[in-house]
Length: 429
View 1 (tube, rainbow, N blue to C red):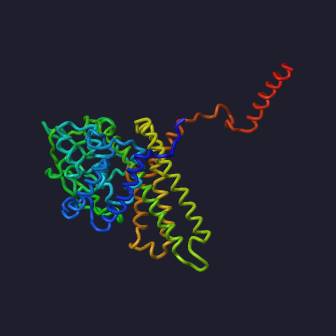
View 2 (tube, rainbow, N blue to C red):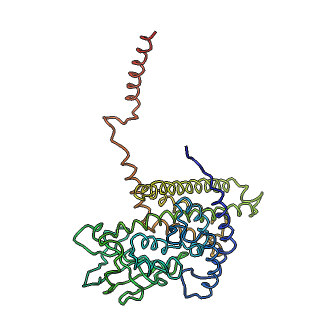
């Protein structure tokens, strides 16, 4: 029977190194340098280059990718334990070569890219020399990709793209975009959409404006494609196969968001507990008050439940190697993630009083992050529906008029069962 909550000593040593390295070398970057995606910031790039090399020397660079791509090929459980550390810092994913959206885009290119595409886009992306953008959402469509209208029409040996995309993360710093577009409107969206690689300098690609999401990003771009022409070889994956390509990216991305959220929840919890034992009130500390103790107890329980749910989901992905088989579990952590993050951050904020609502503490940003996690990669409500549908498939209607746990009906059946057994017992005596 395999049922183990221990980590192998060799891997634990790497986790311990990463924990210390992130605390001492990486977390300070969040307070000094502006944006890990801005590769034009020569001072930041020069400073972080040896940090990235130290990660590579430890074998912890781009661990989500296989050895053939320069990664360690970690399964999701190992990635989960590592991301619990990286999630504490905005800069950490970039220092460890696993920052979104580049990590997901690299997975797409690794799975579906041609050799030419991999040479031109994947390797520089893996080396951390360039950035990328994932261009999917549209302003009018919300969470329903079947309503997307951005089109790609074949014209000779080229494709011509027209349409608008919304909330394109870090588009301003990307060397290329991966764009989802309708290529055959006569069939279902699940067969009629395709992915394309569009270099950032392509004529007709316009960043209309950058949208600021408070406490999260100043570069969520509103992008317009006007007669954007790319060569036929820029089709990424099979024509009409965009949904299959996207699932390669989104399934893992949702899990990794949850893994890093565990780190932020723990950070909020640690700040809450520090405040509880530090702040003096009449009669003792905040931590001596029963209401504070209730907040701490509830927060720890919710945090640990969420962490175990995330790690169990990671374990299931490693076991089945199929995101579709773990769809309900991924939906569950997507639903739980913003709730736990919000509730723990809000309690921590409240215990800090006026200081907690100021920008001198990170709680407001954490609460906004919780709301973002309730929207990104599909809103909470969509994942609740997915989870419920998946769960209900395992149940059948009651066979008769009454529910199967109807006590009078069960009692009658139980009495008949016992009576028959008694007859057998009496007959044997």
